[in-house]
Every structure is written in C-alpha cells, then in structure tokens.
Image (tube, rainbow, N blue to C red):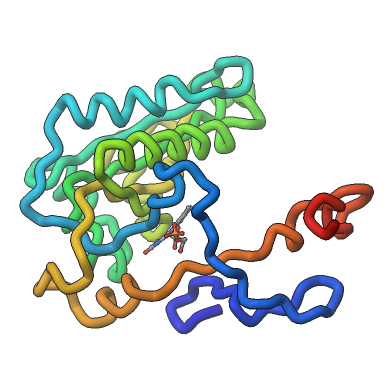
Length: 225
Ligand SMILES: Cc1cc2nc3c(=O)[nH]c(=O)nc-3n(C[C@H](O)[C@H](O)[C@H](O)COP(=O)(O)O)c2cc1C
C-alpha cells in the first residue's frame, strides 16, 4: 500500500514467490478511449456540463447490459452550483471534499436490492455488478467527450440515503466526479497533496497475476508461451 492507502503493485511479489518486474504501463494496445481514461483529481472549475452532455453520459449507462435486462441502477445527479451538488459535497469524506467539488458534476450511484419497499423478494444477485458496468460505460462515454471521471466510495452513505430519500429497496453505492480535466498545476487552489497524488504514475498487476488457465493460480499459457 502507498501512504495514501492506494495499492501500488510496483514491488509486489507474485503468488509463486517470484519477483514481479515493474509492470510496464503499456496501454498502447487499448482503444484510445480506454488508454486515455484515468481517475482525474484536478478539474477545470469553470467548466459546466450542459443538459445535452449529461444526457449523453447517462444514456451510456442506460444502454449497458444487465442480468435479464433488469437495469437495476439509479443515479442522483448534482451539477456544480445546484442544491443537489451542495448537499453531496457536505456528505463527502474530508479527503474527497478537497478535490471532488472542482469537477462539473457529482453523481451518486445506486443499485436495487429488492423488488419493493418490504424487501420481500431479493433483486438480481448481479445488481451491483450491473451498476458497476453501467458506471464503466459512463467513464468511456465521458472520455469520448473529452471528460474524465473519478469514482469514489468515501462519503457518508447513510446520510446520503436520508438526504435524498432513497427507499429501502435501493442502496446508495458509490459516487463519481465528472468534469473537464486540468493539469496538476492548473489549479492553484488545490493543496500540494492533491497535486502530488495526481502526478503519481498509475500501476497495475501484470496479467499473469490474475489471468488463469487449467486451474486457479496457473497463469494462462498464452501469456507465458
Ligand atoms: C469503488 C471505487 C471507490 C473509490 N474510492 C475513492 C475515494 O474515495 N477517493 C478517491 O480519491 N479515489 C477513489 N477511487 C479511485 C481509485 O483510487 C482509482 O480508480 C485507482 O487509483 C486507479 O486509478 P486510475 O483509474 O487512474 O487507473 C475509487 C474507485 C472506485 C472504483
């Protein structure tokens, strides 16, 4: 773990005890929309998200796949300057309160846990999975529009449930900040720790660490051939 709690895989040992070489960040193989996506912490505070842009971003969620086409997702949208946004900022963890308000919008995500308020029938086992996939679509759509997203779990979920009158068969799940990215030095109001963190290189486990064949823990042959 890095000092800021993030997982840094640069010096991790793999399961077989071998030293994992520093995973070369080689996302060039990816489609540019994925290659250039990153969880930005510094946004252009003057940028505003118009209704058409927001609609396009939420359409991306709408058209994502889900178990049995259950579509068990919900989104509460606050745009910088409106009451919903102001209420969301109050609910953020102190660290997230530093950077997230600079984004043009904050969106809280929800997934459905039961069919009705009595919790009689559990909803799809895959509801949270489906929500995650819908959010992934949002990140890609946002990127195609020149925007970036940083997702976050650091906020008071219970207070959010109360503040936004979320019924008991829905669960407030994550948040995301969405906006036009700015460079770490472009925002003089950001404290040093945010600028420093925004500059840290992104790191990932190597494919051999999580792609298996034959049995779990056996790296897929096509990776080692
Ligand atoms: C479910 C979830 C919760 C997260 N929570 C936070 C958070 O509370 N604060 C924060 O600054 N980043 C948060 N992140 C962002 C991650 O730290 C980020 O995605 C990760 O460092 C990888 O960075 P990258 O997307 O730029 O590759 C969260 C991401 C996810 C998906």
